[in-house]
Image 1 (tube, one colour):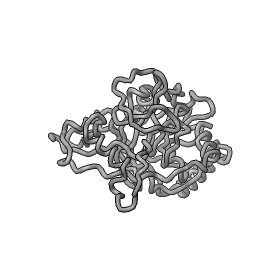
Image 2 (cartoon, rainbow, N blue to C red):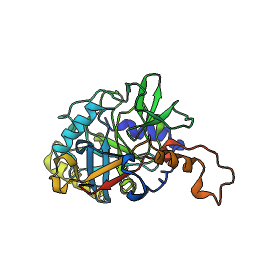
Image 3 (tube, rainbow, N blue to C red):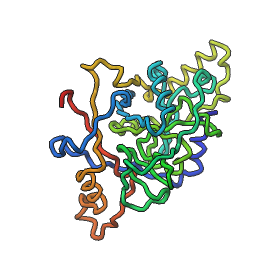
Image 4 (cartoon, helix red, strand yellow):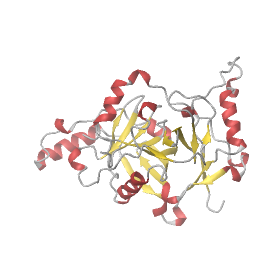
Amino acid sequence: MRTALIVTAACLFALSACQTPAAIPAPPPAAISDASWRPVAPENLVILKTRTGEAIIELAEEAAPEHVRQFREAIRANLYNGEYFYRVIDGHVAQAGLEFEHHLEDWPLLPLEAERTVSTDGFDTFGNADLFADPVGHREGFAAGREGDQEWLLNCPGALGMARDDDPGTGSTEFFIPLAPRRYLDRNYTVFGRVIAGMEHINRLKRVDPVDDEDVPGFADPATAAQKMAERAKRLKGNEIISVGLAADMPEALRPHWEVMTTQGPEWKARKAEKRNYGIYDAFVVKPPKVVDICTLPVPARPIAQGD
């Protein structure tokens, strides 16, 4: 089934799991010039409301256009409203969608869009060696790796990825969000966005294992199916998705507006230097390692009032 490979990978690589890093708080709006921020397009701004709170996601249309297109279609079809995060594994991922294979048949399978050919223009090198790619950096705030003319988005905490079956071209509707760095998934799964705010609410989801299709008999019988789905709802209580919406589809007066810090300006360079030097821990760190993992320093985002 399309949801199987993620859990298999979790078992194989459980020992490599890290704790989700604590991000350096974003500076207050007045502390940074407006030139250091770029607006998020309403078509790429997703509002994910769950029982644990609201997460804001930016879609990476240039990196994975077909995945973003189908994800928008699914959102506009209200596909995820009332569904669940049905696989939430400590140190691995939170996964959501329709869960059962026979529920996914109406949605086309997508070709893998894990990497693409693109020039280095617009790619801002992070400045540290990396175990998985040389170099790593950012494009429009999305953590990315490169090799030659190939570029891919990284499976850092908060990335938005598409789950699939063994065949790389079997993603469709089931998405996942890493709770910890899962870099061995890089170039193997399509990453098509990232959580820019509210990751703490994703981390608060109840830890649950999925139920395989084979373990849910009786879907052909309406009474048994209703009973099984009621049991599922009880088991997943607290992990409900209340709604998923696009800012572009909201009335202008109610539409949220967000900005992401650019990675070309002095403010971002200063944040990287502070993290490398462990400046906020200077009472404890005598010899800072001068190294920072790209997944521990997400690019900040901030809400803005309309007209700012």
